[in-house]
Length: 272
Ligand code: SF4
Ligand code: SF4
Image (tube, rainbow, N blue to C red):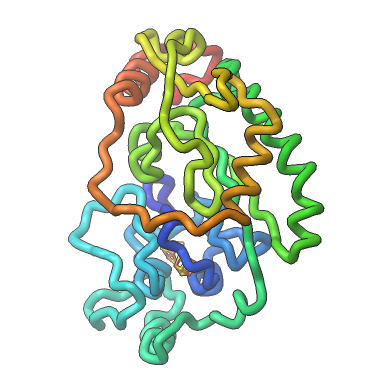
């Protein structure tokens, strides 16, 4: 088992068919949040297995630690010489692909899901990450009953951008970030100096500020988050995101480099 190898989901591309969750027999994905693919136990993923990525019809799965020439086949049958390696049934994947869909499309039938992702750098000492986390918790708790009433299930996930590799895989631009169904609820990235993350990394780091109704906040107000989430769910469909090559901003590279070099000056969150 490998902690340096696990699937990373591009929620912009994901069609929420749930095939990857059904495919994996190793408990990597949360069953509770299915059909939304939420990687719950990355440590259970089999090193260099591409089982779920091979059957994903959307090409939404890549792998942290990818060092092969593998590219997402968008659900098309994979060559026999490229088995998934985890024993969870390449043959059935091919059969599913040959029918033009996933093996478990029925899992998604009639289900509407709102995937809310909170991506952050630090929840031990960064005041704006902690503050935003608390406000988001309150907002998600408040709007979930209404979303359920409207027929949606809410999949709320928090992910620490613990390393530069993880940040790169998540196309992480600025901390903190809130995404709904893969899209950032903030329309632009604005940042100012963050004393907490600068202290963690012993470097000069900027973190996100949120602009709302003419004011700028380091911790967004509840109204802004509620409005952003509901707009993402009920607003006009956003334009297709261009899948251009993503590069980690220099600001975050400084953070991760500095954090790696720090020896516990952050109170135990140095990642070493
Ligand atoms: S199917 Fe294979 S690659 Fe996908 S999560 Fe399971 S073990 Fe990992
Ligand atoms: S198989 Fe692909 S499209 Fe289907 S839920 Fe998994 S990531 Fe999304």
